[in-house]
Length: 217
Image (cartoon, rainbow, N blue to C red; front, side):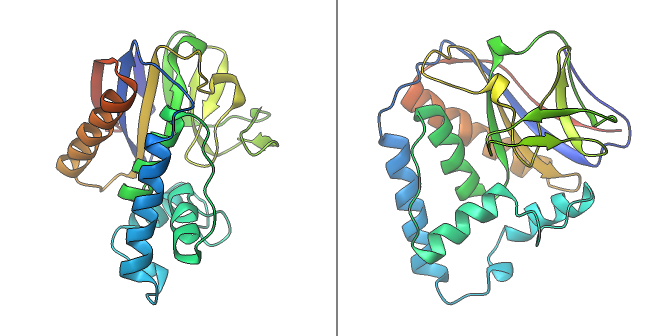
């Protein structure tokens, strides 16, 4: 079961999949490189704030109390690497697909191992003393930050995710999430969710169990 607390200023596109196959194969990683090359070709001499889509992630961060010039959305960090011709890193097929879609859609995207979560999942504001060890290899303070938590505690956010629910080659059931600002068009989000799921099925197989938009009233 999923829920979102009232007045939570973000929207989630959630896809739950089962029977995926995660490997070290490089198809999705090569798609990241192709997408990056296309951004570099089109926008090499463009101010990054003028690139279509960038303001969506910045708007999301501002709405959740984060300054996007100090804490860059992951999608914008990927875009900056493209424009600077910097290297990307391959993790595994499912994480690489998430990064490909994040760069393509210019929105923060997270993937989780569903079997590493426990019980009800809630999007909410972080409480005092809540934290987790993140993919940035640091303890992430979540007090007064918007996050996703299960019955064990927080495991994800638009900033960086917990190691606890990380996808690896043993992952068989997955949660895919696109983070958007509240005013992001539902129709566009649904389309991006379809593309995301199609890319996962093409490269990792699997079946969609559930797909929905989670937003606060």
